[in-house]
Image (cartoon, rainbow, N blue to C red; front, side, top):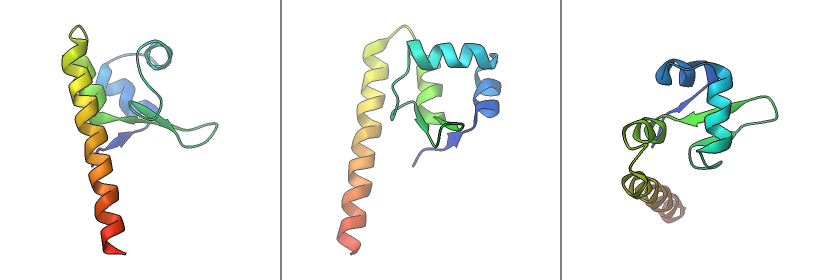
Length: 85
């Protein structure tokens, strides 16, 4: 499962300001994939996908494959949880 970062840690990982992080969030990233809103004041950033976005920023096909793999891992985790019940 992925590690989720708060705003400060995500800014440090990317070496950017909070305003740049917000711009990335609006322009490049998908809510529910790259970040989730915990509530109106808190957002968490998917470390694995953010790192992959950095590496594959100009190779959208490679990044899309990572997103698909992440989504598949979520589905598999849900299936395992249902099987335990």
